[in-house]
Length: 296
Image (cartoon, rainbow, N blue to C red; front, side, top):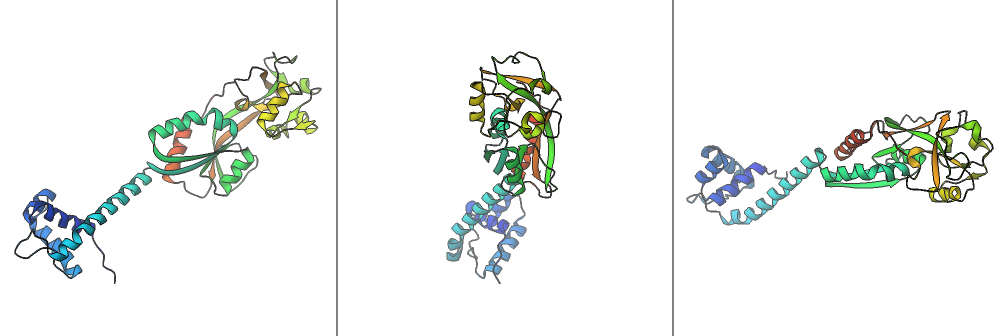
């Protein structure tokens, strides 16, 4: 049967050697000398060898000299492990993988993650920006701890916690005849060339579905989409958060009839607990983003 060592007994041995006596070690450890002596004697009996010379209680035997550096190393390893486990349980260290839609990744997450890193510098963050469908897939497959996205379809394996709503609007060239409007109705856009994109499915099953059902173009890449819009090749619909606020060639005009929104929330596995580090990130995201008002 393998020998089991008690860390506290090893600490007693080191204290006796450092203080030079059982009496000094008992005083330093705030223990009674008989209790200290009994604990070390129990260790010696289980080891099968004395650690201290009988007539010189603070003097190590040759076997004790062999054991001392090994006891010290074991105590160091134990203390490091205990500290790591405690910090991990408190969410002070570890790794978190997060997937978000690109607009959230670029517009909102830099500030959130900067605050998180400042408070939890020993947690490693791995951020993926993907479209909404892929974010949900990564969460469902266990590839990431958390997702921030909209949910296109109900999935019993996923849990959704709402954060905010992102208004859908029309994006068009600044010289377009409708660019200076405060809002637009979808009927006003029926004769426009609408370029569909990855978020166009938000219009399906709404009164504005006709804008994208028979579109001339479908462009999934945002850079290419913006280039087409800047060239005056058509208009598109986007969530407000996805509209590049520093783009001087384009305008975002809210869609008023029908008023459409993209719901954004935290997505995680429904029947799987988060790691402590993922829990603290989730709490910070909720604190920073829940109820956010998205400005153009």
